[in-house]
Image 1 (cartoon, rainbow, N blue to C red):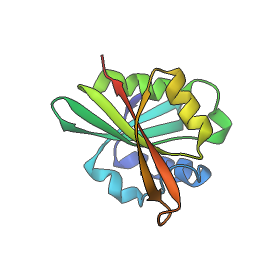
Image 2 (cartoon, rainbow, N blue to C red):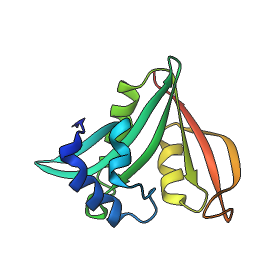
Image 3 (cartoon, one colour):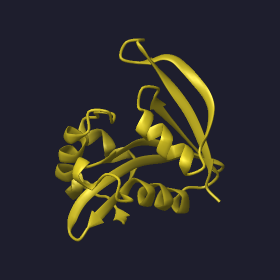
Length: 135
């Protein structure tokens, strides 16, 4: 696990393209946020982007794992590294139909704290709001 930089943008773009369920940001938009890169050897297997919104709160903005590395602990490792890096409670939104992601977050101790109706795809998909304490 390491902090991401601009040199990681091609790997982030590749992973994001392989993960249609993840947010599809223009890669340059990550420049204002903190990025964690999960490496398997020298290959980027996943990433997460996040921000510290206040001294007591952070937000996970995007998390994606290359499908060939799923169910091998990559997302869990990214979330553990995020928990170590962030201060206070960490929040995220996840599309309600993304059952595998919600199951992962729940298994790792995240709790649902809200529902944003019509948050995604022009009002057609709800967002589940979840939080986790960073300590």
